[in-house]
Image (cartoon, rainbow, N blue to C red; front, side, top):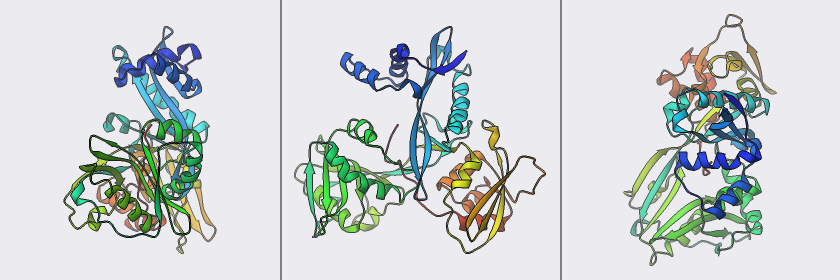
Length: 394
């Protein structure tokens, strides 16, 4: 087997495999457009006798952790021809991707799984859930006067992106695991993937503080994105949705896992589902911990964590994190007896904890974080409590 990037001559073979694996069809025009969008440097394939048998796409992205934008490797399009499955091709791709991301300075990686248990074996762990709401029209939030206004746009152009992108970035940076979006990402992955309208909320000071990206289909108001910076903007956007009451029967939208909409409604008995979504993984523990935005703390001290990682052996070792008035410093010990570890865990548990999906004390209760209770409490105080969220798909 040979593992390498695909060439320009192999783009059509790559798309053919993707269409078969993910069960979609492209007509001739769509196929040409898709071929033009493929960046061969992002697509890695396993070849047998010159034929593509398995592939994945590795996207250079940015994600927010603790309000800080970090380089992230987004894995997408993992696919294999059925006659070549369970022969180690995907394992080769996953191991190669980890090495490549490390070399590129991407200290963390996200992917959407077809099966969580499959990717857990390679060190990824669930890092985000979201709430999926279906709200009947009569249960919508009541209208309430606001000082701002809403303007609707049907043309999704660069000028509109320039106006709402800063609002998105301020909103997204409040969470862990959201994407820091490029201009191209807005058009290729947001607007083209989900057609519709944009409604923009502008406050009394003429500042944009919220927007909706939505469509109306079969008497349903489907919200692709609802972003707001203030309670007033949230109310203004809900007023706008409620003004469609003669056209729609229900509203569908996604929200962060800690969203409080049901608490705010007079009748909270509408359909709410908690959906497991993406998985995350620390690629380079030492670099990630070194740049990690720990919570400001008056406590000075240190904690030592032993990490196991079968598929990225450079991560195995004991990490001492020392906190002082200037921040923190990380020292890695490769020899198991070089320093005593107060805490031990797998790369999966470490990833879930540092991204913010699970807290240290919770992981201790789940028996996925072992060690000294005081050390775990100290670590609990050092990691900011932020909800994980992701509005994108790749």
